[in-house]
Image: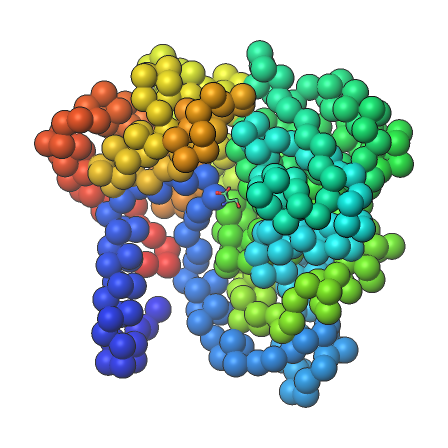
Length: 414
Ligand code: DSN
């Protein structure tokens, strides 16, 4: 990306962008929801398409001059359909929570009963947490992971569903490391006549790479962000059965949003094009191998990994097994140039600001070309940092080593 003008016109923001670029280059990114876009995605995001207003949908806009915007949005829609085997796609949602709000708006009335996974068990705020619009507007009942296995027990889900008879069941999570039994969710929903809603924000890239099961062909509606494992611009989309197309589109616009972000939607098209290439299948496979290697390495060092492993791109580690909380671990690792996010563990006795766990993810490091050997090295550093969390000198030494190591793994868009 050429920032020549920015450098001349706005030194303050230019400097901040340069500093952030340096941080990304010199540090290791293990936040499970982050990734690095390609140069092509970045270029589309930085294009003149941002100048346009285009309320409505291709062929039916409320503003003139949308011939090219229509083409770009249609390319995004067609590629998304191909990637996920979707009947209908709306690429306009601005981000994950607004996409989920539009889904609820399309299928439910305020006060309707919905079933979602509890936040501290791996769910998302927008799946019914009381501080979120979802928990305030809808009557959410929550299911949990099994306290022994750390996995979702479909018999328990069925029991809650039969007892509560929700109008919609939500599956798909933010901090759950196992394959999801979409078919069983569908069976249970059919038993009680509930809608099925999958939020695949975290695993969309792995599903697109055909490395995890795809709920899109048989769930009523599926939302995803586009910037996590899918490696596109920051945004979202909704996929649904053709019979729900109208109500979903109307919920997004004019129900929830005004003008779509056309530059972002074009960048989504670019990212979907990249995800359709064979290299993306290799990427998805390596993301999972890296996460599994990381889980094995942590277990070998006596850390408790929730559910004893992972089937996807992330793992949640109970840091109290090393007498440290998630926040203190996050801060110690940040001092070493390793970014992670603190996380609750199932039935966490500690509060969300200082929870017991840390969530680690491999999408970003895999984009940089890191493989199993590098993951082992990273876990060595993490373990050393945790053990030496009060030793600023050691943390600084690790930071220098991380910086040196990172030089060999360029970031595509930096
Ligand atoms: N913030 C995202 C994550 O980290 O999982 C979810 O919205």
